[in-house]
Length: 205
Image (cartoon, rainbow, N blue to C red; front, top):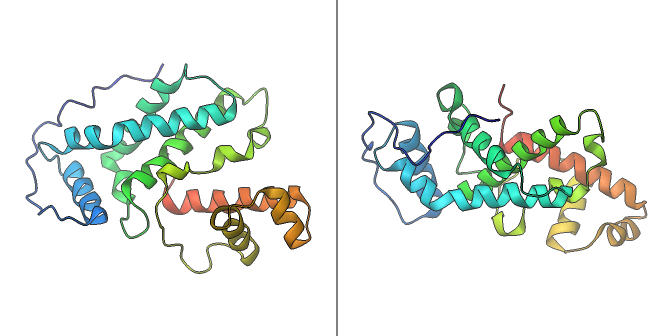
């Protein structure tokens, strides 16, 4: 059982760093993360109020896509918070508001934590690669425009993502358009999403 932590309790000691709150969502995200790391007096309560439902929702959504119920959802959610806080906020310090909004980033972290949990749970049963491909995708409600650096994805990976997400095509339609089989589309999709997860969120030790 994952250690239970009361994340509604404010971190000891810190005062707000006094950073001005701006109306730009990405700036607000960056300011909040700085205040969390600095132990801002109201930062954790603001974080819980604004993002706890998104974190829990991403965990539930990933479990549902994998065919699991919500039995482990609270433990996994606690693990997400632990990942954010451990090693002097190592993971939280890697948030970059120029790459994605905080809600999107937390969705990736939460989905990755859930997938890791399922990988451990299924270690001696079903390989993680046999889980449904859609488990790797970020929920559309969690998405916002992101900046992907040149060279991160291959041309085929970038094209497959554009067709699947921008054009709202399914794997069979993409396969027919590109003259490849559906399994190649799914494999390309999977590899691209793995690269994106690594780009947006480094794995915790």
